[in-house]
Image 1 (cartoon, rainbow, N blue to C red):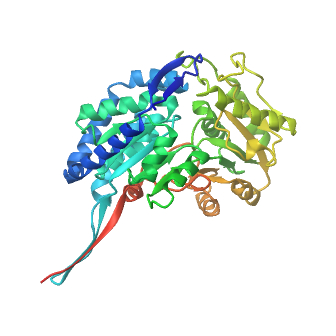
Image 2: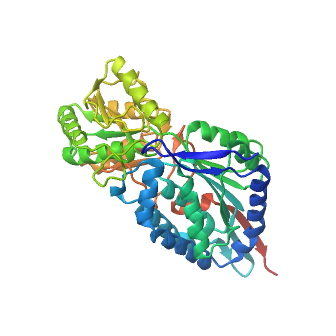
Length: 458
């Protein structure tokens, strides 16, 4: 029986929209249609598939003002930031530019005697389970290269951003991508699991919680369907004694607070060399005190509500736990903090790794800051975590940053920047952040399987 999924707007707690979930029969039928359409889609020239995806991206670009307003209603990001089209377009365009070379056969020998080569073949039907925090950009990371490589795609978007899946389907179909090649479906957890366990799909890409990733892997157990996951994070920043202090404060605090801290690669803990610690904290506190918390539809708002009251409560609980254990909170409660989705951005010092705020994912506008004596202490603390998505090092010494980076248990090492996804580099993680390879050449390889040809010529 179909259920109803509701998107509760964080602006005022009202129901922004609601949709029925697909019945089991409808979901299985959609997967069957995707499979039936895949061979013809893959048979189209690569250049044609790439052009259609880029045309769909251009369709999305025609509605950026609408995008910003709809995202404000669904997940609370202020309209002043203008939606997500910049990153959405950057990622799809980059993948389009490397598609031919990334998917080209690897020719080992082409002689009078033999043709030996390795080709890349699409898996078939790719299920993309996308999150709400950057709903356009996270979806396109997989949707674009999957379609370019010759797969068909079923998109299941998060309940908080149901409308995004619909907008993407509208754009892709308007651009000429066949309806069975790209489908957006509202699914419940059980039906999603059944699509996987019954091998109705051939590849799963999931971005979300650790628990959600575990559910995906359980559903795929014994099927040998690849499951690519990007799960929790607790990304650290390290400010060395030789860092540009002002740049470090501005960038790391923005990395911690932007999007109300709801970023997969947002900064959640900062380690500062003792010689810079007090100055860093003073500048960080002054910066955050200047934020304006409020309705995301107000162009003056710089930080909006968290996407859901329950997400804000996780952050509040971690803050209260830290304070009870001796942490110092530096930001007085903003008047707009209603105890619900609107949460005062917070900076904590006197924190330790015995506190949840320095170990468990917060996914909110809160950051703990600790002093460290040297690189060794910083490395040990950065690695003292079950997650590993990105780490940010602030220094003028590139060689030393490279040395430190090699010792960090993380998917990406940044120097003098953070909270960014470079489509030319592999987006990946380790430990409880999951496993997978998004974007870059490796993103195309992850969405295809190698097929070898050993042809002896007459």
